[in-house]
Image (cartoon, rainbow, N blue to C red; front, side, top):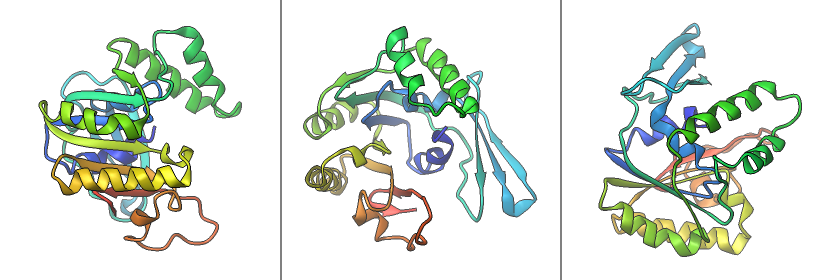
Length: 220
């Protein structure tokens, strides 16, 4: 579901894209180019903007937008994709996917159905997710991806699971890759997880749950 908020940022990178997702789990976010998207614009009388992929859509991912947002004109082309995770989950393994379902709160029926559908979509062409530590594997993956398109490193609600020291190591590592022109960086984490990104945007009101969505180390 979070792809509906990530896609406008991913679409700002000139493609075709070679996407490297760290902490990819079952790799469901790597299927970003298989979906249709709908954004309901609250400031425009709930006008709906819909975007279709090149082929038949696997389904529709929706988000409500308040305030201005640079909605894309097309679904990005993904030429290559790969994830890395300490414990990759196999979308073809019923026991492993059942574990994913257990992580959904009991009352979140819509979210559970979306997960089941996304798993079914991923099974038709399972996205590759390699086993390894993101801090060790990322430079090699970025180099491999560079032969296939514009490299984008993606992290979404995963860096919070690193120790504070490793968060800083990750921040420094990806910034060094961006500075060298090796990749772009799309980050979606709580503001306190990567403070260097959150510091480039407006303050989040106290008590409000939010994520800092960043491109190349700056909040968008």
